[in-house]
Image (cartoon, rainbow, N blue to C red; front, side, top):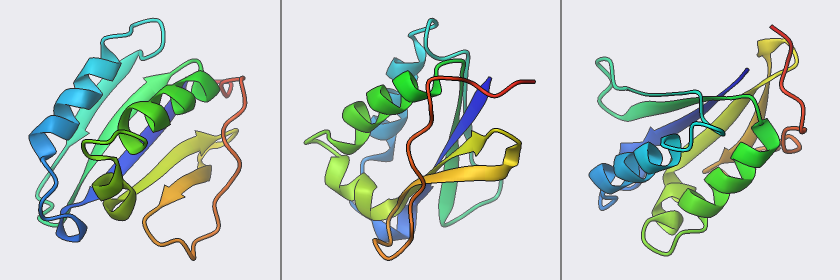
Length: 119
């Protein structure tokens, strides 16, 4: 199982419709063949929150996620300017992959492979 984290920095996109983003993520999570678990974590954070997904198909999930959220005409541009996306690597979060960062100067890692990490 591979964990994905979308961290949205709300201060970077004050006009972003956060309810619509949560709804779009919940809609993605309805595909139980692709998403095994979905959680929104907002514990005490005032400037960001995390949206977490678990999947056994990291490459397929990344393709769907990037198309549904970050290439979307409704909120894609705002999310690209306000989000960081990471997923676990082969050793869990110890070697996570940075898939997107709102700062274009950040070096990104290659997309996840077809294989999920061993548990």
